Image 1 (spheres, helix red, strand yellow):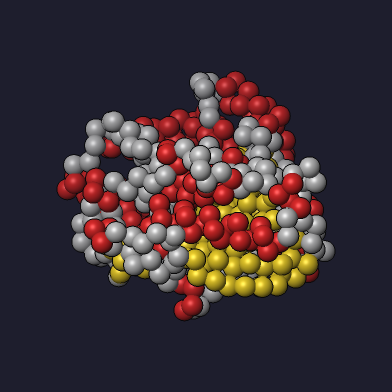
Image 2 (cartoon, rainbow, N blue to C red):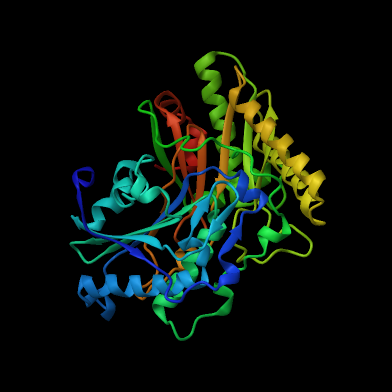
Length: 437
């Protein structure tokens, strides 16, 4: 069984940039958003199944590992803060101390993992950073683990400090690393990093993070992390239902968010016998929402949250209308740029509101972040594009992550929920029409 699969660490190395960082770039100041980000890792796993028709798959494992390490070193030259060290909550000191690279052997076959994609298995493929007290790894802003399977398959985990990277940044890094691995002499310049965010929205003061350090380091025993898949056919069916209720041009994320929200409110009513206020919080990537838009390859954190509340179970139309209103109001705050004092005040009010919702007695609060439309499935290191990509984040109850399915037309949702909520949700007839586990 996949749960019993053994992962053996073979080597653990520090990979440094192939060229030294120039003196004028030795200090990288955090932006306002970086300063407020939680001090945890943002992680993702990319699975590459064995392809007998690809000559590179027939290389010895040592050669494949060397290829990854060599290209990682070259990539770190372009992404120099990733090889640095965090200085309090102020800056990253870029003295080329390097990133962690772990090579592991997996005693088993990848098909078992793909057939049984549970949380305990995924943790084995990113051993670095799992232990918050691990002094050897926690100061490294980038940690990579290459897991080589007996069948010839490969799973690459990439973990970046949230102090430096959001999902968009991680996507940019993986795009560049895979391009350099595939063809180091012909890399599209747009793959490389833009470091202007820290000057566009500089740090206000070195205060504490939005979330306390090491918070949410693991899923509590009474929670389970469930994956629900909305494939293309079911997504099209869900969109038709939403449109029939009066919503124009619904997005995939809107459809799944509203359905999850509606069905979870129903589970709450089943549990408590009464309607309870329900909050739904979503993150917004701001890069394309400013005027002019920021570069999509901007490095750092560039997202904000908005929240909407309803006091009774509603139809999908009303829920999407609420979510669209929140997104529209948030976008207006940034579309004409950042007026520092005004924006910082708005941000802190948002944080207070979200924090209040999480601690309010009698309220149900859900948090959703979407990694859809980031090109993770385009990451070709020379072994073809990934068969499956999944997040491997430090989970909190009711904190959902959305990912594209491989074809780009469906959505996978990762939902940490109580066992009781899961049981009720998986008996909800409307939910089961569109989702499978």
